[in-house]
Amino acid sequence: MQFERAKRYILGKLKNELRPEFTYHCFDHTIDVCNAAKNIGASEGIRQYDMKLLLTATLFHDSGFTEGGSNDHEEKSCLIANQCLPGFNYAIDDLKKIKGMIMATKLPQSPKNWLEEIICDADLDYLGRDDFFAISDRLYEEFLSEGKVQNYDDWNRKQIAFFEGHSFFTNSSIAQRSAKKKQNLAMIKMKV
Image (cartoon, rainbow, N blue to C red; front, side, top):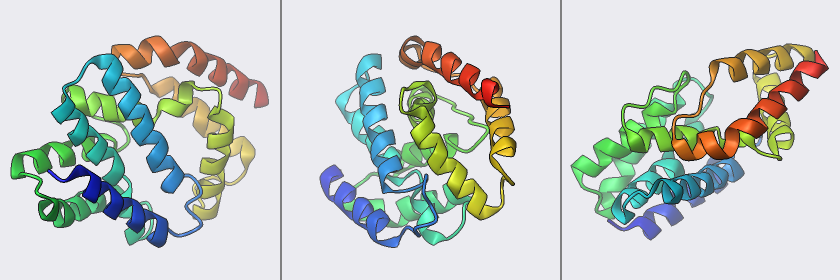
């Protein structure tokens, strides 16, 4: 498994092919999710081999945005992984696990195993962090440009519903992110 080569390839693709209107689903988001997965995976004590699979999945999880809009981007991301990763010596079984992790991030999240739970928590790690509002504003801009929200009030109502339907899966994320997530939700509620 040539992880570093696969990483260089997909980061180059994201940097060069993502459209500028993806203000949230961008290169920075991929790096953020990768770093969050590293931290959660380390806290959860996953094996080194599984860590490489997890990080590969994070790097590819939104690559489908290079193929156009947000519809079915997880499926498109799996296709990209399927096309690219065998060339970097990823085994068929490993590719199956990576695609499972990518699909687990599709909303509503539906993880079926521990690694899938970790990537789901990493993908939404920002919900329970101090930089939540800066990141959330980028998602608002993206949603506005796609016509998914009409205005900031509409956005805040959608965020409240999303927060209230979301739960972290891993013990690490529950312990490290739940309290701040609750504070962030309270601040959103004050805006409506």
